[in-house]
Length: 253
Image (cartoon, rainbow, N blue to C red; front, top):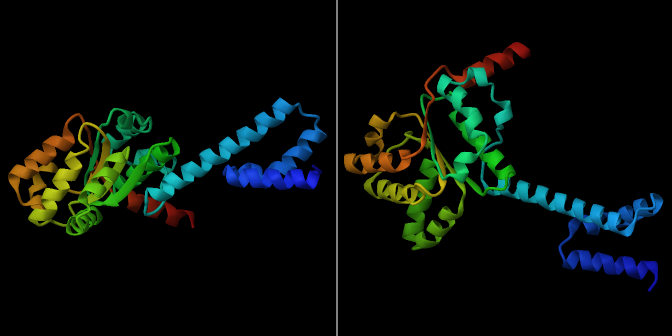
């Protein structure tokens, strides 16, 4: 078998085995190995390591895409001193992602513009990079998806997908109120994860005002009890983080 035939076979094997790095770079790797007189085991090690790194990186990018973040925000971009005091004290604890391992929730509650969504997305992206399966959704969007699944009789399939996420970020609780059906669905599906899988909820309402959303004091009390059990409750009331960012940007122009 001549060199051309060998290269054709390597290309075929790489395609069949789904080895994109080998498919694209095996000729360059062979040239380098010959040039530097690499041993067979060193050549194989380097080739497999690069394939592994590419697969890991592709997996990370895929998890971030699948999470459906509305935009990318990173914990490293947070200006800690501009966050509300309670958030400043807890952001380093959250960044370890231990809360995901222990199945604990985080509830970021406070007035608009104080960094709730930025922090939530930053934690979500860090979780994706660490290998966790994450979903970002807004509460109104989640309610619509639940209602559609019920009408199409696919709630069980939705439930199975919902339970598989290591972390769900449910943004914007409190901007709209719900009818009885929506409240029951939201209660059921957020409760499914309680104590087993982590959920981050951002809300502009304090707990005593949640009955304005759900309209049912008993259900509201039950939901708060389920979601807050062994959870981190972060007081996000403070001056607008977004306004500070905008002022800083304007000063730099």
